[in-house]
Length: 265
Length: 70
Image 1 (tube, each protein chain N blue to C red):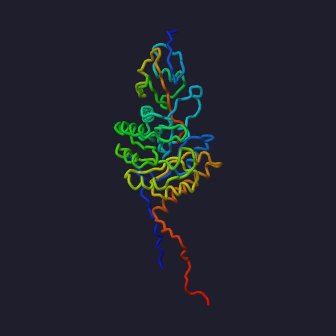
Image 2 (cartoon, each protein chain N blue to C red):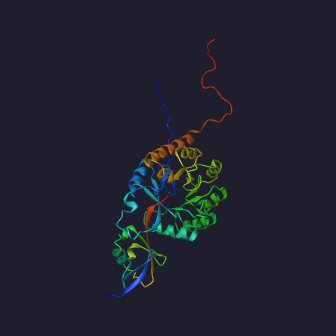
């Protein structure tokens, strides 16, 4: 007797003409030190790693930069425009990031509210249009609004990045329905960005059928970031496989798993 | 001593020699040009041009790089 193990082979994640094996993307902020960051990122299995653009600290120019710990040959550096509150600022940061010379990708954030860090969709769309025209591959951090996601896709964004919940909140996927709706309607990759708190959040998010997840605080702020990074790698893979496998239908009443015949008198 | 001028680098005033280029400024700050992106008065200056751009009194220079972020 031969046994066939049917293995679902997933497609690579394609964004802006590039292909990635891992569907987990990780940030590099908030780690207690660079060594922990480097080990956590390695443990996560992520290929796409986000960085921010900031002024060089001129009093500490001797200090090793973050790139000392992140081999650009091994990781795909995705610069963000975090901290930008206007389209003009975000465009300025994106241009600076591209000048660093790694790639033409930008994780576009235009923040509209300091307390919730929710996006300013008007500024976001405006910045996205300009950056796409300038040849950027724009990955747009947005809210759960389908119409905004559709407009972002119309501008030519390479990926749409709806939030699971607010940045750094760890509240998990608050509205699976809206994320599913965006995924169903948008043809570009949908990467859920922000809000995941623990491995089950990542798994549930991937089970919605999205193309990937970007997270930072969930790993960096865990008691053991390296263990959490590993857990997140497994969770993203498990959630993705579960989605591809197709879950059983939900039932309100029980259905026995064992035969109801052959019972003793 | 050549005449000195004042430029604003990352928000702070710095005295540099007149005729100093952006490349000279980076050398003065002990910064490797390969590790920074330079903006002069809001215009990005590409690496090959850093030696050609001479600083003038009151110029605003931004020196940025990648840091940890999400």
